[in-house]
Image 1 (spheres, helix red, strand yellow):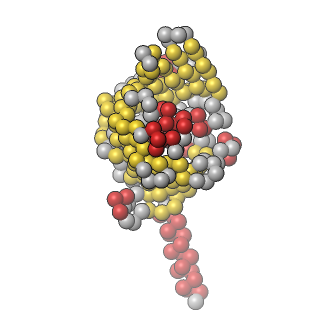
Image 2 (tube, rainbow, N blue to C red):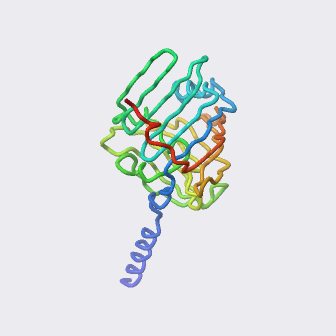
Image 3 (tube, rainbow, N blue to C red):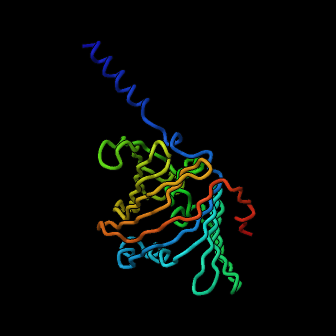
Length: 242
């Protein structure tokens, strides 16, 4: 009996050691990224079931996006003939409308729901798991078209005081998210994101298509990411918030 017990403990320990870490599934070589975000379709009625702000964001049909490690994002769009520049740099967010001279600043360091990061585009970078997200390994998927992906529950670190949870399916070869389920702070499913058609740019994998489904299982929106360029050397000055 002692031999069997020892063997069982050894097998359990071996299984635990075999669990993938989230750090092994990030792309440390991805330093910056640029692309054009094009909304192919947006069903406002179905999007509204997810979140009003999310539905509004999908009204913008075309945006130029630039991202840089760590936690830098710049998005330029045209809304009603006016250029809108949206910048997030760490915990600072700035919205500029040059035509009207409007500049709005916001401290989002304690408001992760107001920040947009690599994670939203199905990409995992090391900075996401440095005092921002925590990851818990659940299983390796063994069926369906997600077979072989690693499944994690992603939550914000306790200091951010936000109980939002995401469940993600990560491709261990390309190191991108294939599927993400978004659960609100009340624990209910809000939306499902399917990241598709990955392409490689300068050795880094990036999804080029995003399909959003609401909690009712209805397709709410489809976006494509065009002109993808990884590690193009985007200057940090592009993300200035002063």
